[in-house]
Length: 236
Image (cartoon, rainbow, N blue to C red; front, top):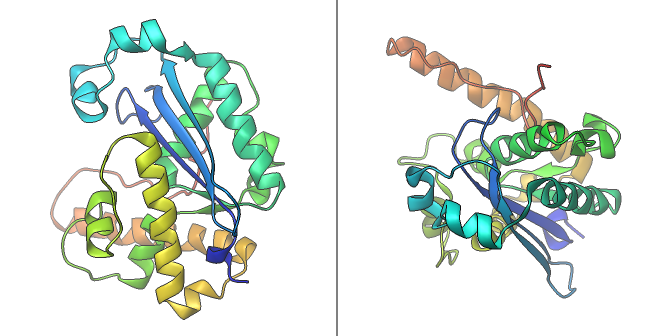
């Protein structure tokens, strides 16, 4: 059986912002799908312990008031999310996350912020992770595509329904469906075994980041592109 036909643990978060070192999780979802088995879904509404900026609320719809009145304690939620993902990796079920570097680095920093073992440690280090990132995969097999590469754009291009974008559960399921579609339409990609696919994505993400950095440099732009995938190393 090809990897895309097996069980996939689709993971997505919505946050207080885009700074992986300092922003916090507001909602999260893990949807375990595929493999001919029933879907197993878990969702979290989290009180991040800080104000949710209006810019973030306008994206995902969660206000500070809602998070404080209805959300779970952040430390408890982060522990649950981390352990649930680790349990799936222990079953050789890969984590599917669109732009995994963001979602997994935020989760890593949240765990460290609350004094608990991050996912990397729970799975025995970087060699123990299994991650599939449709963003990296699509950029590998369709390097010169025109237009953006947001989840919404790619879902539209590949005929994948996404009716509630920026809701963590909807985005997680869409990422799993996109991964399935990419594996199915590209025979070389679909034939990978999971550990090798994870390792090659590390190299592909590095190459993609290098190409983008060269483009920025050629345009005189000052941005620095992060090339490490899927978790940016923590600087204590």
